[in-house]
Length: 509
Image (cartoon, rainbow, N blue to C red; front, side, top):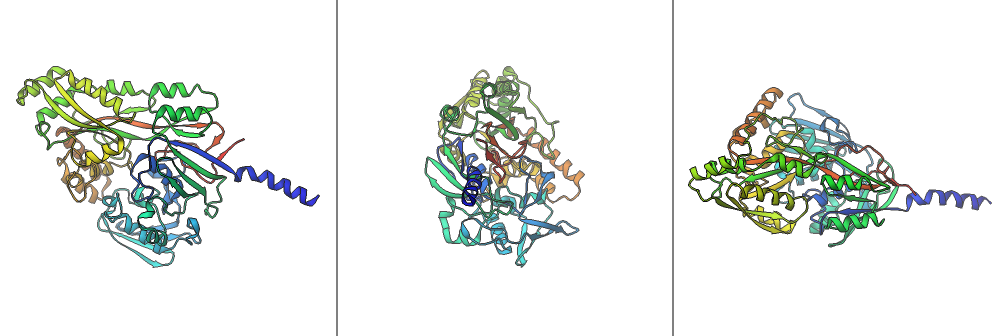
């Protein structure tokens, strides 16, 4: 009898331990699962399930004001804000048996994040002067100058994720597909072009996860992904960020539609060095030819927030009182004629074939055509699109991204000359904009919040006046889950662009 009761108790506990969550990702393959290289949208969510930072965004939040302790249990800051000292939790286990987190791992991770040979986020860490372990559980970071929202450097986001030094050095290039962190789920194996498989990390310091496994399938087709979900083959998937689709999925029984922040800010970047866009009048003509309100209406009120400034709406330091260009095809044609193009112009554009981009670019193309501007679209797969725009092959580049929500993160990466193609510190300045370099640099070093905000405002106005870009809209995240999937928190935001999976996430029978 005693054995029977014990067996029954084990059976009651077994379902939670055996749960496998099936996820659909909108991509054809992995980019990189190395947290210091993971820039593609489909990789960010997976990395978020596997890694931790010294501090973290609480599950369901993308608000930097709510950052809380994670691998660091506490920290202190010098009076000048340049020295940060972190005290690590004791006994936090790495996945796959790679021991526990030490100060040496943190030093290695932050130095790696700042190394452009190993990190896609090195520019974010360029103001770190030194990182050192003062003992096995204490790390001291010294900054060269004040940094906007410095605690964000150490969060569970991009380069702030902590990796196992021993695992990274042993794996070499293999770390791209089987990296080792401390999060609730460990990356187990990759099936190229098919899926990435994760397993629960039983030594996760916040508690063993209720889910045993996570299988994230690469399904680039929206309709195929939706069919798999409605057939019960997926419990969680990235959805279409379109109003009609959201409304339709809300009517599907047993389905929960999650719409959350941050948006990926959609912007048209105009290459100021490539003819004919090297003429300000032509860029102004493009701005007059595009009706942003019609594009936002096409995308839908539930999923799109109209942009105004080069900085996304809601970011600290963003403004709205910048130069704007009313839709006016006649004015656009007059500007083209003034610039020596009475018969119009042709602009090359490399365009991704994904559903979040191509339909919008078709709208832009139609609007430009009415003003005598031919948009010569080179439509390619998403990976090729990323490659070609970084080769500076596009005159007009449609780009969407979410960043740490302060003005500097967008201004530095999208509008500083050091971030332009061809620069050693290239990031995302496909416009080759240099209109506000001085203000962007001064704001990074400014310690007075009011003066910093004023510098950011001036920078945005100068960029808008130079027509380096045409801000379109903030496209919110849309994911769909089975009502049986309990996230374990309220989902208002996630900088990883997908729902965070935690130790509390579970599937109900």
